[in-house]
Length: 59
Image 1 (cartoon, rainbow, N blue to C red):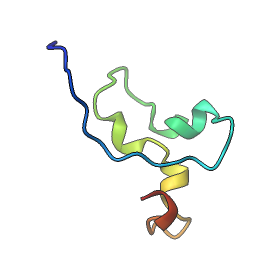
Image 2 (cartoon, rainbow, N blue to C red; image 1 turned 180 degrees about the horizontal axis):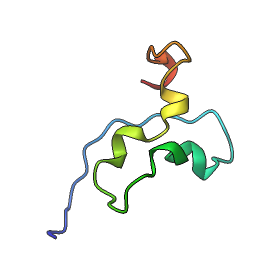
Image 3 (cartoon, helix red, strand yellow; image 1 turned 90 degrees about the vertical axis):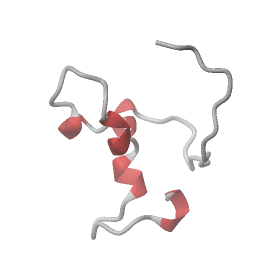
């Protein structure tokens, strides 16, 4: 793996002091032993509303 020197990304402030690891990657998505592809599930319960629409506060 090549090392990187610059990271360009969007940052979002999280409205909580302590983040439970189940909020980072919910257990229902951990059905693989590979770590690749899990990023799309990061903070899923916070990024989307119950109706499936994006939460504008964390999109």
